[in-house]
Amino acid sequence: MKIFPRPHYAWVISGVGILAVFCCLGLARFAFGMMLPGMAQDLGLDYSQQGLLGTGYFVGYLLTVATLPYLAPRLGARKIVTAGLLTITLALGGISQSSDFVVLTILYSIAGVGSGGAYVPVMSLASHWFHPSHRGRAAGIFLAGAGLGIIVSGFVVPRLEPLFGLAGWQVGWLIFSSLSLVLALLTAILLRNNPAEMGLEPYGRPGPLSRGTEQSADTRGFRSIVLHLGAIYAIYGVTYMVYATFIVTTMEQDFTFSRDHAGQVWAWIGFFSIFSGALFGFLSDRLGRRNGMIIAFAVLGIGYFLVSMNFGLVGLYISVALFGFAAWSIPTIITAAAGDYLGIAAAASGLAVITLMFAIGQSLGPVGGGVLAEITGDFALGYGISAALCVLAIVMCLWLRPPSHGQ
Image (cartoon, rainbow, N blue to C red; front, side, top):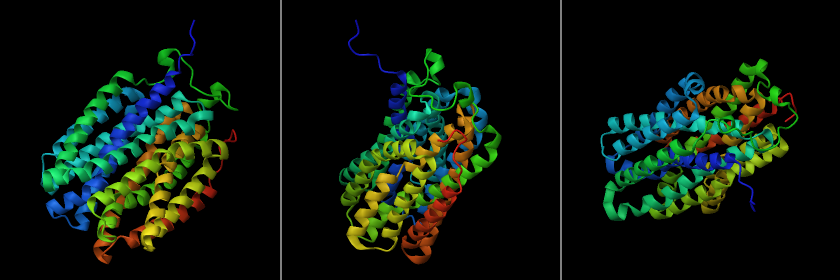
């Protein structure tokens, strides 16, 4: 007789989702903000080059996401996610061996290809493996991996420079490449495309929709919903990437933090962000996706405003805390909203299109912030514009109608 019931395999999928996001966002993307000051110092990169290097990643990300509506139905999440993580492994390994700006930009673009290939399909699994009652929380749990990646980079990277000098950033990328390989193998072994492969139903309560209806919810308004959600997501992409790319540089240059001190603050962002997705996923499950996004953009906007006005260390620390707590709020809610508005059958392809618009925003953020900093001498204007864009996003959220079933 079994004393404890066997847990639903959806929770194994959640664990794999955390690891995949840890790799494709935490290591491949958000470690970049911690690596960038050392890379810039070693290679002599100006602000524009730093922004272009970050944008290279999103060009690759953009290219992959554009193909996912065609690839996802044919190959399935398991194959695409594994291939994406292996691509990241190769790209980060190549970066660790290069010191040429052009080569680094190309390699980091390839890392973006892998990240896009891994992130979108793995996040779409929240709609397949969880009913609407738990969908937001599940997506938030997946995104805890990004926070773990920030913590790891915040503690690892500052400790490499004393050991390896200016080449510390290269050693860091090599370490992250090795971790990515291990996670790719685990993903290939454990990931499953949907519950039906194992004779299971999604976890949670189906909600007010009948099972058949949920498969194709709101598909008649597919285009308008996708464009509306995509525009909101694009604004988030622009704003959060300005902050995530340049906040460590801001701490070191404007607040004269040491690399180790900046790394500790960066790690705190990661710590706060571990709870971000689950917190806002829960709020959106209870209050609705629209209200959840309004709260999230308000928190993010205040965080951007505080650092743009340079209210000293107190303002910086409050900004860091606010950004951390809301860091993965919008991706979590958008992922859940795609399932709610579009239905399970169309969630993956719809999320790919929405994420394509998000990727365009991400591409504009770093290069725009870098160019503005080159003109003004710091990143204050970029942070200020990000705060204003959050206000615009709130207005767009107010125009968003709830799904027909009342979520």
